[in-house]
Length: 153
Image (cartoon, rainbow, N blue to C red; front, side):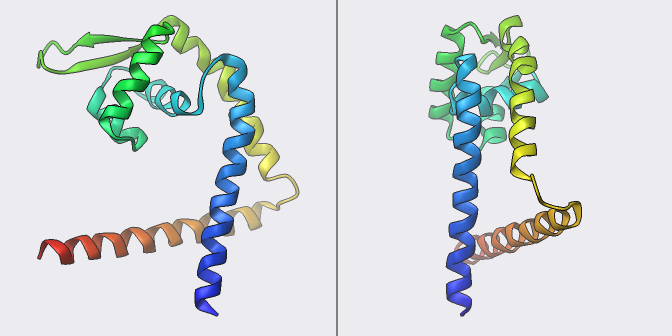
């Protein structure tokens, strides 16, 4: 039974994630932004001027992927690279006015998707669901850390 429930949980979480992605992609595409770019823009809207490495870590992407995405966003006039004044080897990524303006155009779409997703779900059901999913994530992260520590030891 536990094996079946485990498979069902991962399947449902994956399907929900894909549904969110599809719904959001349809809306953000109107702004000429890809799903991949969306994550980088969100990180820069939260903290502009990150280094490429910091941006990679915030978004959870490998650095070569970040370089490619930043190249495309730079060619679209959404970001600009500026050499770090403390460490000339590093490049900081800053939003342009055009990149900053996309926030006002795109964030309402994300909020709309989130609202659609919880339609018909009570606040207590949502709170319980979020709590359970956070605990699932914590369990999995702890298991990964333990496995990693076991490999290092």
